[in-house]
Image 1 (cartoon, rainbow, N blue to C red):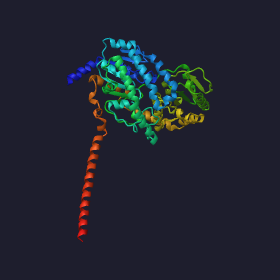
Image 2 (image 1 turned 30 degrees about the horizontal axis):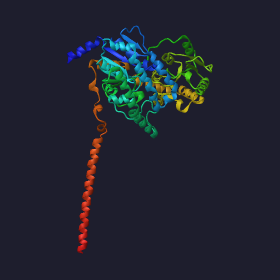
Image 3 (image 1 turned 60 degrees about the vertical axis):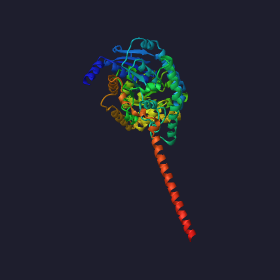
Image 4 (image 1 turned 120 degrees about the vertical axis):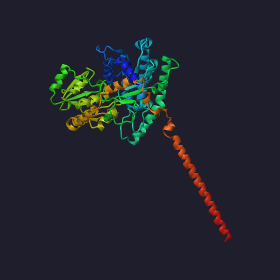
Length: 511
């Protein structure tokens, strides 16, 4: 045994061959994984990465990147229908066609075809969990597979790897609630789960299975079969923020703000603006997908009026030069190095769409937030942040936004010191770990490679039929026994009663 372990470690020390497939054309999804690819390459592993956002670091000579940036043309048009993206019952119908088209693009990509056509081999395939059809590469290269997610896992991922799911205890990510659900919310969550499992998933998996047959032959395994072989799942969550969830040993939470990088010098104009704003700065950014330039006119008017009345300077990431109004205290910029801005001591508050990476950065740099969630997991993120009392949320898609509401919320999170105290404490909890999130992913990835999979960590629950899991047969047995006993007791009582009545009747006749 020791000899085998030594040989495995020796083989691994020379560098494993790892294929990473992270197709989502979304900057925040990609940057969450960059530290993982860099660390794997730095440790001597040979990494081939299929991504729309290559790192392009010439120092990482053993990191080969296949650029799929063209898929942004498929992804970006979705955000024109923000109202549907906000509706949890419609979001899958908006996302799936884009995901399906992106998968086809990857399978048709010349570089990907060339990769499959040469004599390349891999020891591990890492797949972004939104694209389970990409697990087929594990079959192609006859190696173990793992899932990777830049946020918490969807229920379909938890269910496929054997983690318990519950629509009341663990509402799905697109739903706009998190804990202590009302009766209406509980009904909504159950209906969403049933619609997702027995409606959307069946249709989408059928299309994915047909696509796999098209590209890999009629005998290609189904998405369900591929998911059943997944050795491990890595989720970018932390219980201090996201709450405790029951998971098996094949699920690793690596959340802990792993994408935070070392400080870099600010551009000269930004540095001067931040340094000179002794009264404090409010940083306003809606992330990489929601564009401030696409705000409705009434929303822009309310926001710009609120910001103009603040006793602070404002730095606003605004993607267009066509700005209707420019208050004197507001500096508009097309792009900012967000981490370095939030790192500046004069930044007092962060107005954000509360995407997960922005939320992590605000926590890491101890900046309280005013949150304007638009779609996806953002409302649930806002609920979590409100629960921890590290910011205030304005549910702009549902309730709209007013000047007074935004202005007062910003002033409150700045002037009330408890918000900054709470966010600092939460950061300490998240960072107090025996190893970093990156180290967790690396160690467990190497574990899967060393043992050629992690089937021994697979939850036995996956092999138990639903009727057994819910003990329906056991319950039916006990109900049957109890019913039989009750019937026998009733018959016995009836017989005793009849006998007693007959005896009494005879006595009366004798008298």
